[in-house]
Amino acid sequence: MSDLGEGCTHGIVFDEEAATELLKGWQATDAVSFIVGNPASAEVKKRWPRGWFDEKRPCPKGCGFRGIYYASMAHYRMGDW
Image 1 (tube, rainbow, N blue to C red):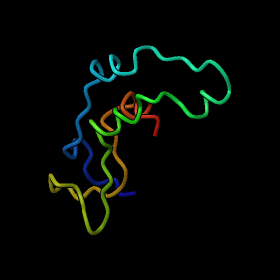
Image 2: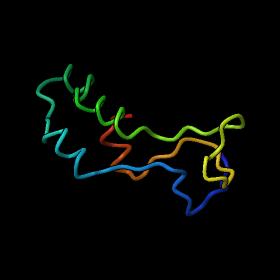
Image 3: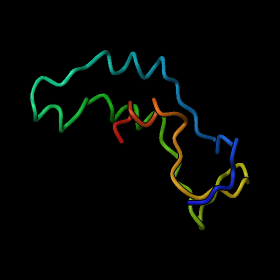
């Protein structure tokens, strides 16, 4: 992973308030539901995808970043990546 692009958003956005509403405080009720996770996480991933940049497709903002990028820790957690 490159350290280029510090301070760049790489065009990745996330609406934590809307994602919280989608997930609606879901809690696992048993081991299986814990492993499978919140079904609404798929919608979070669809609406606010993470960035995946490499040599063939670097950051669209031109900073040169290559790697996986999340808008925030909440983005990572709520998408159940």
